[in-house]
Each structure stands twice: as C-alpha cells, then as structure tokens.
Amino acid sequence: MHTSSPINDVTVTSESVEPPSWTERYEAFLRWTLQKLDVRGVEFSVVFCDDETIRGLNATYRDRDEVTDVLSFVADEGASVPAIPGQRYRPIGDILIDLERVRAQADENDVPYEEEIRRVSVHGVLHLLGETHTGYDFANEPMLRHQEMLVQEYKEILF
Image (tube, rainbow, N blue to C red):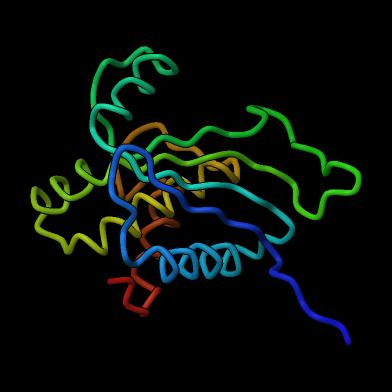
C-alpha cells in the first residue's frame, strides 16, 4: 500500500511564549500558502516568540536594536539551497514571528489579529522563497501586492 507524504515539511514551535492552541490549523495555512505558490519539496520552520527574543535576534543579525513583527532567515542567502542526498525536503530557512508585536500591530492597524498573523506569515514565506521589497508601499511593491492577495484569498479560520 502506498501512503502519500506531504509535499512540503513545515514545523511550528514556540520559544518564550505559550504555544498557540491553533498551531495545527496554522500549519495547514502554511501548506496552503506553499501550494498556492506552487512550491514543492521544501522544509522550513516557524518559531513564535516574544518581543525580547526577536529584539535580540534583530540586533544580532540585522544591527537593529528594535522589536519587529517577523524575521526570515534564508537557509543560504543569495544562492539556491540544493537538495541533500537522501533527504526528502530541501531546507529553505526559518521564520520567527513575535506574537506580542503582531497583536499590537493588528490593533494599531485596526485589522483582526488572525489576519495580521496570516500577513506576517506570508511575508516571511515570500522572503524565504527569494522575494524582496525596498519599502512598504503596498500599492507599488510587487512582493507586498502578492502577499496581500494571498492573505485575502485564504478563507479558513485559524482561531
């Protein structure tokens, strides 16, 4: 009997915050995002964290001693990460999401917290896949327009 395996491998964990009760539905959202982007055979992780954790990483890796909503760490910046012989999935990197910052940002922008989680998650995934932006002009940045299309298209409830 043949059993099918997922076409991508996504791992979601928490560091310095309580794991959300909606993690399983969130993983389904990430798999849906990859499917919509026609991405197959990759693996990445998402780590939910707090202000202090992401501020430290932002200072260490980006020289910005400030809180941010999402950080993407591409597995091999500027180059295609090859598949590892014998390994089913090609690692593309890691995403860190500051749940405290995302909640505050949702309030500031008067959008539902769940929508903002989807937004920063898609943003992180697009960066892992090599998309970039030079600013935050949602009307003129192709990556941000792509992000918003995906955020609005997803109709399932995460939490």
